[in-house]
Length: 288
Image 1 (tube, helix red, strand yellow):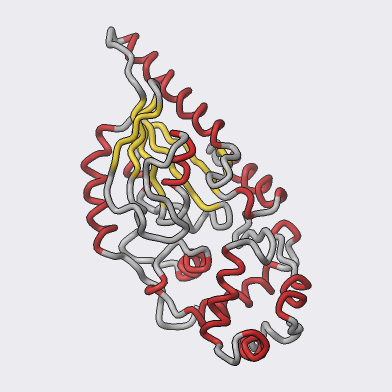
Image 2 (image 1 turned 180 degrees about the horizontal axis):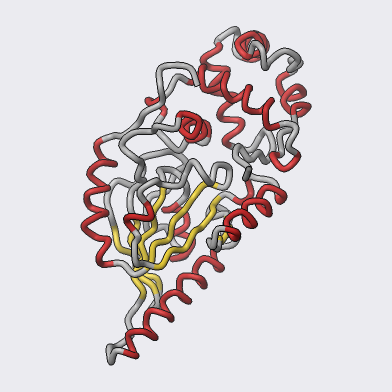
């Protein structure tokens, strides 16, 4: 990724992480939410340290935005590492019941241990944790079956911690998105920018759009990625030949056709089209 590097750590995230650490002792289960398009880039490097000794449920959201082949490949990859995954589309509600059932099962195990110690059972206390804009709040709203927390497909909507009661079995703590203070892996940072999982102030839209074109070219030979270059060519009316060598030229040519030569506006349009799946279901990351 070209300079300047992608970095984003606004004040509300730093404050949220401090609040998060103070509340970790109160929870029994951590429900970690990741983005199906980039399940590695949306994994927090400090997670294992935070959840030490607690049950961990990994939820991969936006399953609708990747190919079935990509999902199968990632399920096998995580299973080989001893990590069970639950895949969902929080916006549509697909798979949300499975998330709830998995959380309640974790609560049953907790309460069995409490009974064995002579203690009364209680609702399981679960923390929803993940990067900004991976769909945590949308998932909670689906679980509760009403809009109890603000939800939008942009980073930084949730800014404070809030408890939500889900029936008699589960209490959920909705936390703001958390990021590491520094994004050392710039390829992962690019993926976060492409999926709108960090604020737009962190990156140059034209540079990210150019890098996106190169990434599509690299992914195209892998069928599971879902990259269809023919769809891009038909949508924008400009052949992609040579775009790998000169993505700037392709972006300028497309801008001439669609945005009166405004490459910044065309770059934003390209990114928006990807983010709303207008370019198809595309997995930006696949297991090695």
